[in-house]
Image (cartoon, rainbow, N blue to C red; front, side, top):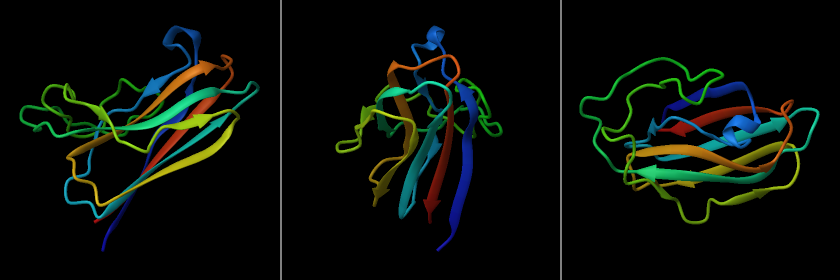
Length: 139
């Protein structure tokens, strides 16, 4: 079994322009045995909202490829679904309500989907709050 670990967002600043929210780019989880998303919210304020995992089964035909997402949720992270996950659905059981800063991990076992991404829908935060996101998978 092989492990894959990567930092998807590195110090992304939650801000009012994006509603104190973010959506990561898609990660291909085809043939993964299990995977997890971890999000650390930190900073001077207290970020609140909902974390959830979205999934898609689109093909990757014609998709771009690139490097780490870094500090921008709009940067490309590897291959992406052909229609950017037009068929995206929230994976049942993955809505986690966030009421304070800290680390939250969502584990997914035996995925039956091709793509996965993490979504944070903020209800409040400050422009000083940061998001760091990691992805881990086992093949």
